Amino acid sequence: SEGFSLFVKILDKVISVPEGDFFFDFVRHLTEWIKKTKQREDPPKYTYQIFFMRKLWTNAIPGKDRMADIIFHYHQELPKLIRGYHKCSIDEAVQLAACIYRVRFGDNTALFENIQLKDFLPADLVDKLPYAEWRKRIIAVHAESQNLSPEDAKIKFLKILYQWSTFGSAFFEVKQTSDPTYPEQLLIAINKNGVNLIHPKSKDLLITYPFTSISNWSSGNTYFNMTVGDIVRGTRLLCESPLGYKMDDLLTSYISLMVQTIHRQSTNASSSRQ
Image (cartoon, rainbow, N blue to C red; front, side):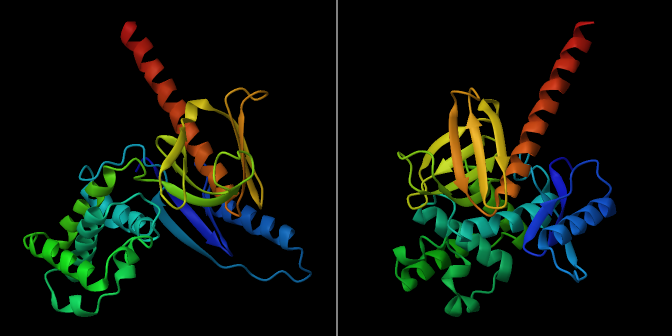
């Protein structure tokens, strides 16, 4: 279960339960914090939802853990594809759409007549081809994989995404105010490779900051800031985003895992020398 976490959704926030915290203690602290920030005379009773999801994708390899792929990974990665966050070719989009169709409807081709393309294709690609052309191509690829079960279609879907550097990313749409050479509106992807800055229209990768290069970061209700390199003379990334708290938490978790891994490797190396 390494890399998985409990998440609590309360009001408009989804917050990861810190490792080592007792769940109900965390929820109590969370509701008390919200009451203070809302400053109401008669605070309402807050309801919350609990989710169990993969948070860190360091060791997530499609096909390695079949149950995790089927139950968690597919359903977490699908919305990111549909929102158009990945750089995806038309051929890849057709392959992926055929997988999504097979997951939902199996061998039943009758439903191809009325499919909503927005449920099967990245949002930025839907208008690249006429509806009839998309449908024809998806039907053809679907017909080539008649022996593929819906579960195996999920794994095939993940294996296609795994070829991309943005697989297993958490994506954030931000407004950056620190570097005039980058677009004002940026897509930030945080994944096992580090913090990635992506052009929001072309989806081209502009730069990747490995975790080892990040020296400082902070967040608030409306911002996320990060320093790369030397704290005094390093590069600063200043972002406006209501999801700064999530970026902060995810960066903290990935760097903590990296430090733990390095410590474990050095401990094992010293033990083997004795």
